[in-house]
Amino acid sequence: MIKRGLVLVSALAFGAFTAQAESTISPDGLKASTSAVSIGSVTADKNGYVVIHRTDVTGTLPGQVIGHAPVKAGQNAEVSVPLDKPAKAGTKLIVMLHEEGNNDTTFDTADKPVKAAGGVVQQIVTVE
Image (cartoon, rainbow, N blue to C red; front, side, top):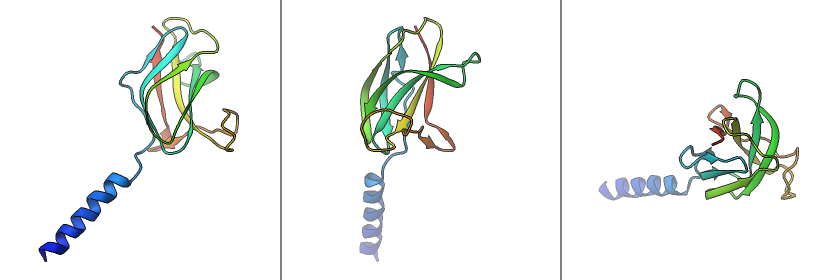
């Protein structure tokens, strides 16, 4: 009886370690300057991109894409995204995770936002 219990517990514990983590962008280490955004940690279920969007006038909805950087499936530490267009200090930017949609390793319209826990995987950051 004890052996079966240990086998079951071991199998469950092993399964927990091998399951992929949910896609996330950690707010820890998230910083924006006028020329780049730094993200301390990004977890992705699939290969994709961290994409930087300007926000609308409310500061909450994504607008124009002003930068992107590739991420691999799994844990990505210290991701830096150079901005194609400078951002003014005090403005808000949306940092959004997109997954590779057509296996061409180029960020394009086929690469849609990643959704997890009922919403798009994103964080809002203010340019310093």
